[in-house]
Image (cartoon, rainbow, N blue to C red):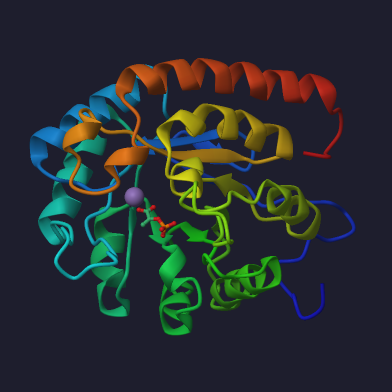
Length: 276
Ligand code: PEP
Ligand code: MN
């Protein structure tokens, strides 16, 4: 792919790895779990407890929510960041949360271990340039209308600024299909693994919008070659203030992680060397 100076996989096949807490991303399989939004101190504490108990490796939760409707819950902002930090600290989990505004990059970076750039901001070049200046890992989500090449060029913006700790996230693209919220593009995962040295994460929650699809899509994503998953889990999904239809329970997360671990092991038995 032309024009990729820093994101392209080189002939030596070397892949990016970096540490977040005890995890080496790009080497250890990353299991991100947590609610769509941080809703209250109690809710995120309970989510963190469930994430820890079931074996997740990172806690997610949105404090700044990019919502389709301006009347929908917009997130708790700075208070949400604090609740998420406290929950991560209490249960010994690193945290990830989205930054939506260039002016908030340093504030969010103060609280979080990993910054998320959401699908709607994938091509916000000012925001990409800003996170390129900081020394914190970034999860860059694929825009819902973006090609693989556009995603890689956005990663290039962050890398160009000097921040080498970038991972990509396939979270579904918009197609003519309406039964699912988006069409999870698993072929993009395999394509990306062949094009870039950056770790690739899959988000089956936004990718399908349907909780019954989380497990089959997660296991398929592993076989497609992903380095980790990001799954929405809520202590009480029916009462969630955002994305209630796609969030799984703690019990479902436990079942998912058992199968994920077995599938990751199975994958390593199929591929020797560095293919996936
Ligand atoms: C999210 O992960 O909270 C989110 C809003 O996802 P996306 O940007 O992929 O829609
Ligand atoms: Mn969500």
